Image 1 (tube, rainbow, N blue to C red):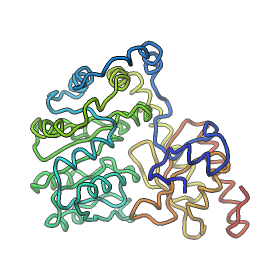
Image 2: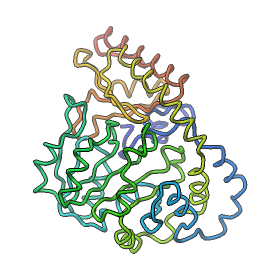
Image 3: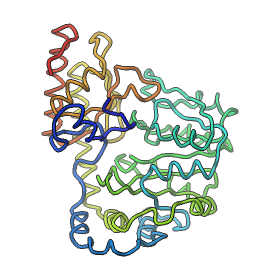
Image 4: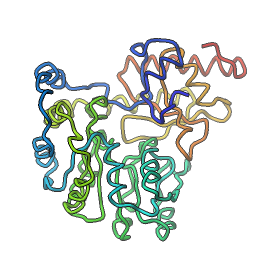
Length: 368
């Protein structure tokens, strides 16, 4: 199984599974910005490698100040971490919820963090007939059973933003709400939808941001969390010392000022996303409309294709796709792919078309 360790982007497992060097894969299983990393990242690696003999700033002053300025937030409301993964785990350890409400499907690390802290899960289903948009009626029905709601905004793997009715209802419910905005940078009207500023002054609202997806630096591990200063202080007490390394701090401080890169990314996605959605639909696939840089789609039942069939075939052709049936709430027809540059997307579509034609023609048998 390509997702042996629970995520996409595992080129080492792909190399073992499909018998080709990891450098030869087109990776559609992880959702990185194909325009990145920004050029300034290369400059930092070239100029700052000698400085790794020094300890990093233990409280990440420079990056924290730049994030505060960028989003107009009190620096005391920001904590930088070793990727969003560390911050997901950290906020759950601080809040210690007895029960956590999760939309299904959603990112598996929410559940993992809750189980590690000894808490239970309350599932809130997302339905295909609603385009996987969370419904307030489904949330409201579970309010009495939940201490904490942990929700993607936008959600992974569906790419859907939370409706304002859901957010406002939860803010009024006296439950703690944690929003994972790991992909919010890709949303066209980011400032209108993000809850960062509100979280900085609201005791029961917390927002987590990743810096690895938009700036395409997942190997560095970098993210930040915004919450009321009292909650940030409690998180600081549990965070591992020197969690954010020197190069991550330098790169983070540089990329948040890359306004041209940000504009170029949104301009690229504005063109490429609708084009790719239309091309996938022309293949007969059922595509979920997305606000971000990845797409969830399913093979129609008439095709009698499973995502594992597709993943196996395409992996042998050097293209990695995400088996979305591993997200609770989705069946074995669902696949998630990143949106990449046009030439790569054309290659993806060519191989996908070949697979579908060969599979349906040969009655479920493909020749990789």
